[in-house]
Image (tube, rainbow, N blue to C red; front, top):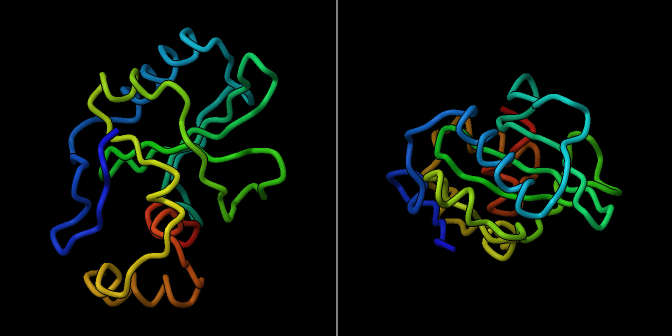
Length: 151
């Protein structure tokens, strides 16, 4: 799994190429491998209040998780689903069997990287309006900044 770091140039370890449809294809490959199934029948696209795509899935053991995509940087992550409010804050977890996403050219973020506090020098590279949003919404972790509910 590749490390992801916020830098003055953007998100290091992620690329800007690709689409949500490639992510959905990777999800279907991932679900065949686990196995599992999608819930709700549709992808929630970015919109007012969040900057990421989300699909809820049920794994073979009956647990549900949210698969997340920040399309701007082709960054994939997983969040717990049970007990997590619809619009967050998210509870980042390790993505089981991430290889289908890596094979499709996505960077898979670890829960450790997403759950760690965003360093002041990482936040300092954000444009003023984004930094104001981060401060106003009290986004503490790297994950809360990259998968946010205020864009």
